[in-house]
Amino acid sequence: MLIGNAVVGQSGGPTAAINATLAGVIRGALEAECIGKVYGMRNGIEGFMEKRVISLDGIFEDENKLKLLEQTPAAALGSCRRKLPDPESDDAKDVEFYNKLFSVIDELDIKYFFYIGGNDSMDTVKKMSIYAKKVHKDIRIIGVPKTIDNDLTMTDHTPGFGSAAKYIATTVREIIRDCSVYTVRAVTVVEIMGRDAGWLTASSAIGRVVDGMAPDYVYLPERAFDMESFFADIEKAFEKHPDVVVAVSEGLQFADGRYVGEGTQSGVADAFGHKYLAGTGKALEMAIKEKFGCKVRSVELNLPQRCAGHLLSLTDIEESVRIGREAVALAVSGGSGEMMVFVREEGDIYHCRVDHRSVMGIANSTRYVPDEFINDENNNVTDSCCEYLLPLIDGEYPTMFYNGLPAHIIL
Image 1 (cartoon, one colour):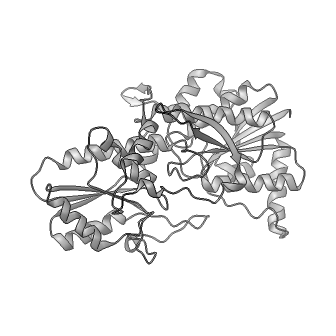
Image 2 (cartoon, helix red, strand yellow):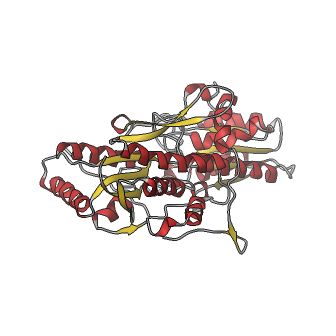
């Protein structure tokens, strides 16, 4: 057992549940006798390199503040998108980077390092683990998953996804209700986040196994998009009713690799080379208007997908807290270079246990929506997909309100 301090950071895109995971890590760290101070990184690894840390143990001795943290959306500690250099590199700049990083670790007597994030964040955990082993540094480094995209491998799902899916499924149903009041032919295109994996877009169809209310079509980035097939699908939908609603992923691409929304995108990329996507719905709106001449609008759900703290999945928040707490337990027991995962148990009753896997096989890999969850026409998801997703949105978190608005904590 190592005696020393702990530090926790948040990285990548925020979610409505990332602070619940933070609350779990804090609880676990406060309970561990071998952990002294509990620090939080301001703006992830970038802030940590600049020694911008905050003491969390004093702030969160009160359980009520931890409960408030659980329901606060976005990253309370701040986030970043920083790609670490190759830990095996002999380049002077790369060596200097890791020397500086681990000098801060030594200065703060950090023995337990927790990083909450998605795929790119697990790349950070992987590289730090490799370097720590290389220089024989006795430190426990654990990755705690977070991403609304649900695209991390080796885990049944990721914290944050369930609440995003609940928001999307609910909002799309409300859009369908709104669109159904008129008899004029119209198409509504709902653009949903998802660069490479279509889990979020798939969640728009969950209502189908609840009461039959779902979009007419759902298009995922796992399949090449064809405009003529899309037009044919709309024609078929018009034969059934005048109000057509389709859900599309922002990451839709044609067979030649071009993004459907390419003409409306900025082309700007982040530190990991990912282009900022948007505009797929708008591009399809213009194409539909030219083809059919009917009333058409596009709705981009945008940031509320990941920051809608007023509509949290109880399952998601409870699991997010649990996986953060168990990350500390793993580190205290000797684990390092691991990412926490959910393993779904077999049976009719939903249950997931928390486990862990080596981060070496997780970082920089993508978990796509499997073939069996996509229909043969490539324009919708199957009922089995909706049934897999349904338990993840179950339950309503008892959100605390103040003067009519959800209460948040600011660090």
